[in-house]
Length: 251
Figure (cartoon, rainbow, N blue to C red):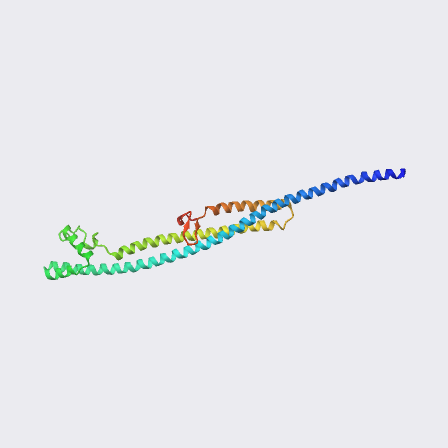
């Protein structure tokens, strides 16, 4: 029995370092899994926020695209109506010019009956303009503006055409702004897709440094894109822009 005692002591001395090394390996693996779990949690958060942001960008791009179509259609309608009013105004102005010439001819021929008959049948705008021109001495002073050039001669059709052309110009500008906003949201959608790519490929790699590097790239790209997203104008579902105006849409 005494001879076997040294063998037990020797065996215990050999097993003690192995047990310590095994314990260290277990603790290192647990610590590695802990760091890996934190990294995967951070990436999962980035993926969730990126997915939500991508959906929002697609939704906004659709709204701004619809608003662009609506504004463009309204601008085209206004331009067509302006063209029609311009043609009608030109026809009325030509007719008034013919009537005015007949009036001047009757006046020069001292045909009072014809002159008065023509004057009575004139449109009110032309009648006021002729009276103002005669009072200003248009028959004796060639520098006095004729009836058709006086402010009293106003054609409603010409005024409507001018108003509609300005409205069409504003609608075109609004449509261009909506188009720029829609394009900006589409661009951010692509940038968020890049974040998803870097975050997704990270899960297929085992090298810790590469995983951390890809996670940093995804995080930086997400932050930059999110800041740009906050700066973009928002279009409501009823196609009314909120926050920034259409004119503030990205160039």
